[in-house]
Every structure is written in structure tokens, then in C-alpha cells.
Image (cartoon, rainbow, N blue to C red; front, side, top):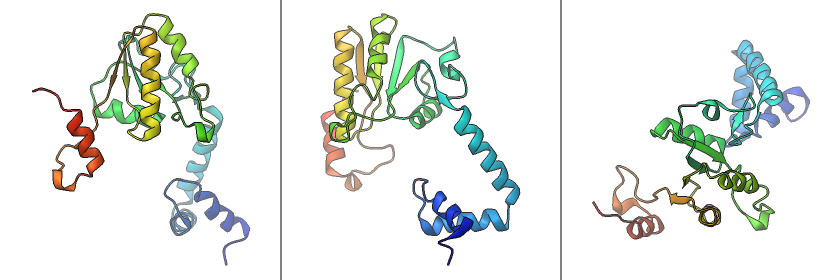
Length: 198
């Protein structure tokens, strides 16, 4: 019934969001149209402005409205420590959850030769230029613990070694509050092999 027309287009457009299927998109569309048209207008205007004005930071490649993001422009942060992440969302998560006061470098993905994603697509030439300056003393590799994420971390670790920069990998394994009987064997094996002295 609603497959055609502007309402159908709205529902279909909302389906582009991650985790939003046709039913969720339909609920969102009807909510905005029936209950909160003002919020829908503000959402539409903000989305248009964001698409026009948000770009990649020239230094760390995260998303920002300016040439430099707030983190790169903050002189109180330690520019000798750089945390490598896969996405701008990772920057937000790490900055909120930790006391990390260094800088970031956002890859916008991970190495995946089958998908045509190589070092150039991840901006690793820009990262290598940064390492060549001698300012960076440590790289913290915070890529995901997928096969591609591990391969990406290994590749960047080799770049760091080439420039005599210390590289460390964030720990993976048993989550806080996790019970061993509910942990999958791969995660438990990774945690067991990565144990450290206390």
C-alpha cells in the first residue's frame, strides 16, 4: 500500500540506516509525520547541513566541521602517542571510556584485499609521513579483533617498526564482569595467551 509515493520513499530511505528494517523504518516515518513534524524538520535540516559541512580532519581523518578536529586542535594533548582506530565512532568511544590524552588516526576501514581495500584506501601513506617526522613515539593499535583488524594491526606494527616507533596492541579477551562459562573458546584462548604478570 505504501510502497509508492513520498511516504514509501521516506520509509525506504530510513532503511539505509544500520539496524533499521522495513518495520522500524515504517514506525519512524509514521511517528515523525503524525506526532513530531517539528523534530522531523529539524532532523532534515541538520542532516543536510551535516552532509554539506562535515569533512575529514586533515591530521587524524576523523569527522569534523573544521580543518582540524577538536582533539587535534587541543594543545594540551600528547602528540607523541597516537591511537589507531577503524572508525570515527571508535574515537568517541575511546575518548569517553578512557583517560587517553593522546591523538588519533582514523583508518575508515581495515585492510581487505578481497574488497579492494589496501593501504592507500586507509590513508597509511599519510600515517607513514607522520611517523617519519619523528614526533610520534608510540602507536596504540585499537583495530577490531577480526581477521582483517588483526592483519591491519600487524601491517601498521611493521610500519612502526620501520620508523623505530613503539607499537602496542589493546588487550582483547574476557570482558569485565564476564563469566568464563559464557565466553566463546576463541575469545578465551586469546585472553589466555595474552595473560600478563600481576
